[in-house]
Length: 498
Ligand SMILES: Nc1ncnc2c1ncn2[C@@H]1O[C@H](COP(=O)(O)OP(=O)(O)O)[C@@H](O)[C@H]1O
Ligand SMILES: O=C(CO)[C@@H](O)[C@H](O)COP(=O)(O)O
Image (cartoon, rainbow, N blue to C red; front, side, top):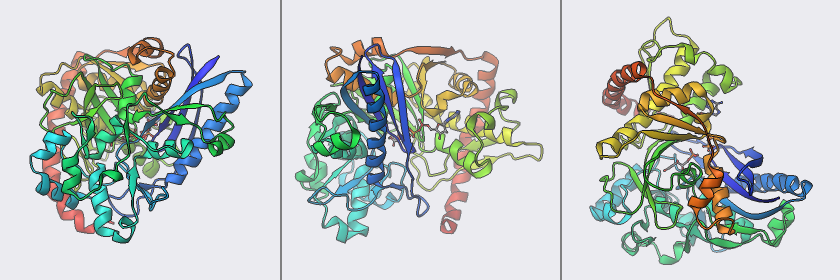
């Protein structure tokens, strides 16, 4: 059988899927890598760790393919967005990558707003947020001038890994959209933005579509992975664009809820005409010519992994969450807001931090676990609410990511969103989306839509329960009040942070 490989370069790990022409996942491989939080608000990774881990998963899947007598028709990527990989003249990283969930760049965001004013939203379709790439570039220029002086270009995480596999430098439009340097509607680097900050055009890599062929494996990569040097490599896209592709969000109607380290609620936009006034992100889709809008919770799955690692170290998620379904909505009066690293939607606020409100001597760890799931889901519901307020109907949500593994959480999503929630056969939407880009690029299908018909398989539907949905609607009002109530307290605590 012929296969494609979809590589999802996530924040916690790289996960690769080997997918056959029947659209079924034949094998999976993953490798974790460390995340460095040297100071409050900082988040970095070592680009070399991504490369090593990706080579290992390719080797593993290549060996499985060879053992089955099959061959690989293409490889493509889904990547964590926005991370700055700053390169010198010989394309070596000058420092660790500064990631999407790093919020050290508030001052640089204010500088961008001062310089560009209203043009920023007109050109980039997005406000200046700490997670985006341009503020990170300006931070390095200001705080590490000796490194910035040596910098000649930059790449995003999965584009750097692809460069290391092929030797060719490109960036796809869906990922470039998250740099705050792209004219999103014009689908080109924004001369106006670059000129405002004195960034030369040569700093920005050539732009390609997500389905574009970007080369074949270099001799060194072929040697290290054991795959033929003729293996075709396709650009790939931002993880959320790929998640949308992998969930079949290729036309208006369905909404995506993705809970990985971050959490997003995403809708398809056929053109660039929608105006959410910067309340949600507006980016180019991996489907050529299309766009998507999304709200982002910075610490969605991260809230749960932080909670487990801090209070129940070594406990598998299945055991930690075993009793949450037996507790009624509201977790016995315990509320959690997931602002562990600040927030993006609907509060663009790098200084806010998380809270548990309403702790009671009767609460058990299971009440806390339920409150964490509810708080994450309420935060995502704030994005659902932005879309509903803008006139979108949200009635059917496809749920993907690690958060879609737990049936109680899926039912909770249906009850909180008051919408049907659909789970896919594989919750690894971004990896599947990447495999679909390779399959379409390699010519297996004439379009991503045709590929989705064969690859995207709905597994189960969770229908909202009217009584629980009413209860959650009440509680959502209380949840919303916690942000304003805790904001001044968190500002006062800021000088005490690590
Ligand atoms: N069995 C599970 N039940 C509930 N949540 C889970 C489970 N396994 C993982 N998760 C959640 O999913 C998150 C990881 O999701 P994943 O999509 O793999 O992330 P990323 O792409 O950011 O690396 C974890 O942080 C955790 O919150
Ligand atoms: O910053 C964003 C989107 O704007 C994040 O969604 C990142 O793209 C990381 O994703 P995960 O590791 O959570 O999949």
